[in-house]
Length: 556
Image 1 (cartoon, rainbow, N blue to C red):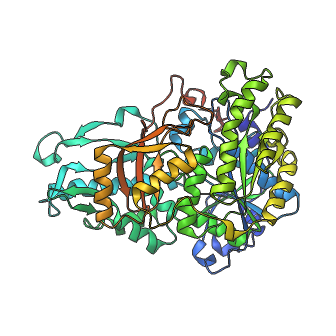
Image 2 (image 1 turned 180 degrees about the horizontal axis):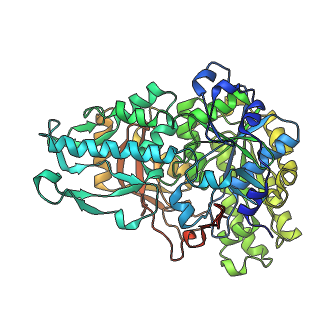
Image 3 (image 1 turned 135 degrees about the vertical axis):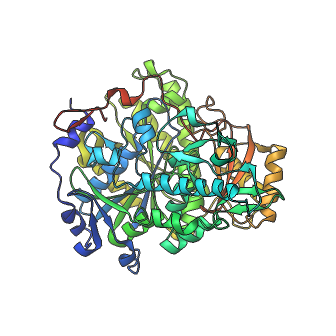
């Protein structure tokens, strides 16, 4: 059996100009990066109407068994093309840290991939590096402001802006810098985030233009002064230079699937830390050019879909026409308490128990957000007819249909059933029924409580004194109307990764709160969430190599 990278390398890619033609993008609006990828001039397209239907792909809570959300997204777009629709994709860019750490690649899998797979998984068009540089420029200017007389009266103990890099490196989570005497800066505690967890990443992904990006960067809170006033990137005059570094990164990247479906792959914030969606600009550009746009949100629907709706859709005026909820029988049995080694055996009682996770996500999609869900059941050879029928019955209880999905093995052909169901649901979409989890004018603490109780199934929320103090301070400083972004484990509805399925009656603990003023949301941290991951015992990097003739191996 061919590996993902072998499948990708055997594909005959079309020149990127041919892909652009499918969306009626003229050649002068392309900035090619080689033969098979290009930046698109979104500014020249901004006056076109957003005509397309938006389909969101999300999933049940992730498990070690895997769900295949990106693969389904790509396969669905290919299937829609085969069904005669002018479809395209709007996806996130992979991060080098997970690629070399756990994932080994994040451009789909099997016969449902975006290509050039190696480029997308590695340096691509340099967006990640530009974001890293812009972030670290601001960090350097903060420390330089202190060094050069500290005109903003910055308290070095209260600098909130961290440096970043696009690699998993636990060694950099906490460190002391500025050592070596006066000429080398002010000694202080510091640390690194991974680039995808940075506020610059979240800010770029929600910006609608260069002017909007610059204004957002200027609002970023980088520190607090000795008299407890926020100090922004605008206060140290960093917004112009940072925007200059991000000018090209703001343009969406155009690539293709294995069968030549256009794909915008742009931006990549984590969904357990930030909002987990690709850029507003890429999504809006796709909607102006295609009849159907397939996009995905990170992790399960409790994180990715909630933030896609309550943050991205709220800010950008987007309304999904349909929602695909990805699941596997294996993952549902995992939620029912089955260990990974035993997932291949039929186990209807465990599957029934695990289906509670699916049910809660479906109810949230229908009853909280007023959207139409379709279940994409990624099929494995070990799935039995009885197990598949049980999933169908559980979904039907909530008014959702199930499509068996075999896009990993068959590409778009394996997603035709899903494509038909999605378009059927999209045809019944009622934009007036679409609602958010909470209104803008609700107090910040109540917004957090609304997400916890309405989406997660929590009984209540407990705030530490420090969190409550920060919420009051942020409200007093004019941040009260911002949406909230809850950072928690992706593995459970709760803040305990071991509570699988659909736990109820728990109390969600918010230990700290911070503002991402550039992105425009308030982050509430629950549980033990790290913004700089570490590498596993055997990193995927161990298997990645390059041959003498330049062919990359080991990406999967």
